[in-house]
Length: 535
Image (cartoon, rainbow, N blue to C red):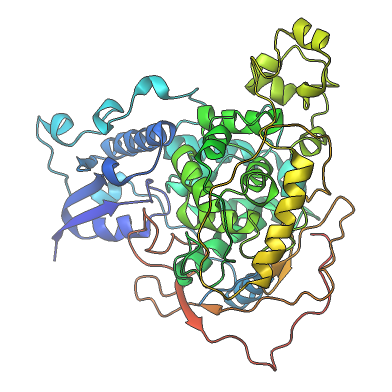
């Protein structure tokens, strides 16, 4: 018996591997492909809004080719370590193969009612209609849509050696062209199916004798996505400190001036300012660049709450995904998952590791482009004559460092120790802080990237690949969550590599990730006594 269907597009803005869309079109005489825009409730900035509109136009074009249209309405307990997630997924096996793409054959005998006024009534709007100023967008480097996603994926899969040798910590945050895939915005908006990505990678891996492994491989990056989705689905108040059972309660400062300087790339630390400028203008930054600026804002230097940084990333990132955004800010601020708070990114030395000449800074902070490499990361150290020749006087054309890194990081280390000592108390009240602007050449030991983890103490290898847990520290065991599959009637086989949980601001059409909070593990549960080796 034929019926009419409404398919509500939310994060799956594609025709390929979209089982819900296929189900809606099956035995359907009238299909309504619906997308609801609600800009008043969106925290996304202009670049991200443009990406979304690109994706909608591409989807509408793809549907038109097979006789349909988008109806755009402008109305404006989890595994808490990566290693635990891997052990759970090992029992589930690989994800299902992708569903076939919707084609004209699927729509035989089915139509989408379109009137002459369709484009006026239901067409994809422009930025002005969403209340955005189109002059605020940056360069259009990453057009949205399924077409661009699959084209980018195809190009990457042709680079067999690169795919097989890919290790995320070895990519460069200062590369002038992306050293990673930049598929994250397409995964976030559902322009690319994560299962399609997984199996395309598997095809490349199958033809090679050796390839990188999780957590640092490309498969591993998809598992990180599932890790934070699962945590976000089962941990209450995952995107805030108050009421979050796994989040360290910290006396973060309320310092709007420091937050504004950080957001606008005016901290006086060129590496940090270059990253934030790239973020504001292009909507994407390398994951290690995100780590550097997140650490700088929170426990490293400015002692501003990670919740404030989360809001900025939610606005500016093309790939701002609720669970991943919150989970990474919890991690980088030392509030959850990662507890080696004594390891701090240097705002000077870290960028030098991959770009000693400062080409990245010269591109994104052009006022400093004529400084010699010796001073490009620390322009305040340059003699006045050098600054004059460069056409930039520090303190006049470019700000002095907002804090003295060596002093601030040591002070913050003591405050983190205090927060850990006070663990279990009620949420503290933030207080106003007053820091003096100065400069200092010191830096602390540098982490590289997340590696394997045990319980709630993920390890972070240093430059030698070793990162032992401090003596006397204990694995944190607040809650445990288990991924289950076969319990959701809408997706009885797959719970991993699926759409985000329904608490996501842009949730999937159906819940595909089932999680339950369980009591903390009993005393008989073995606790690892050794730290993992470098991943």
